[in-house]
Amino acid sequence: MSTVTLEKIDVLQRMHEDLQRALQKPIAQRRWVMVIDLRKCVGCHACTIACIAENKLPPGVVYRPVIEEEIGEYPNVTRRFIPRPCMQCDNPPCVPVCPVNATYKRADGIVAINYDQCIGCRYCIVACPYNARTFDAGEHYTDGTPERSPVEEVPNFEYGKPWKREGDASPVGNARKCHFCLHRLEAGMLPECVTSCIGRATYFGDAEDPEALVSELMHRPNAVRLKEELGTKPRVYYLL
View 1 (tube, rainbow, N blue to C red):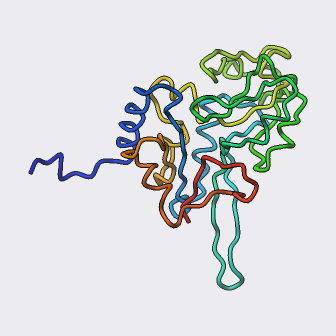
View 2: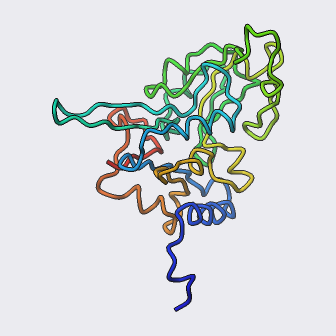
View 3: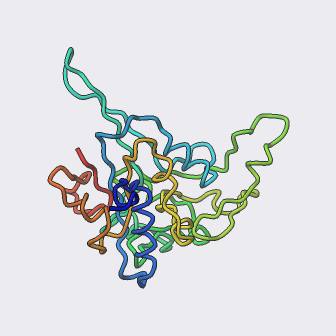
C-alpha cells in the first residue's frame, strides 16, 4: 500500500475537492450547507476576525459572531461557543419583508443582498430570527484620528464586485450579512471562516453531493439546526 493511501487526508483538502466537484454542476443543482462541530469550537474567534479581514468589514458590521453560552449549575459548569453565521434559510423571513426586493435567494440557496437596490430600511434586520444581519452606518475604525488608514479605503469584493467606501455609496447605508464568502466560492475557494478555523470545527460543501463530507455530517443523530420550529429551514447545522 502506498504512503499516500496510509496518510489521513486533511478535512480542508477533502472539502476543497468536494467544492471543485460541486462547481462543475449547474448552479441550480448545488445546495451549499455549513456544519459546525460545537465540540471542537474553542471560542478563539479566529473565524470572526478572518471574516472581518476577508470582507473588510467596518465597525458594527459582523458576519460571524461567536456566541458564548454557560451550561450547567455550579460547581458543574462548562462553556459552549456557538459561531453564528447567516443560516441561509430555505424559507428566509428576511426576503418577503424587503420592499424593494434587494434581498433574494439564489438558485444555489445563498441568501444575497443587492447593495445597489437596498434602501436601508432595515426591515430584514428586524425580521431575521437569528440576528444575522447588521447595518452599515458608514463608520471607520480610524474615525476621530488625524488621518484615515489607507487600508480602510481599499474596496472589498463581495458578490464579485468591488465596493469602495466613499461617502454614502453602497454598501454604506445598507443591510449586510454573511454570504458564505460567495466571491471566494466562485473563485474555487472555501469560505474564509472554514479555512481559518484552528480546530477544523467548520465544514462546508454541497449537500446534493452524496460523497461530500457535509452530506455525511448533516445526517448524524447529533446534528441540529437553530429554531427549526419557526419553519425557516436553515442550511447551517450544528453537531452537539
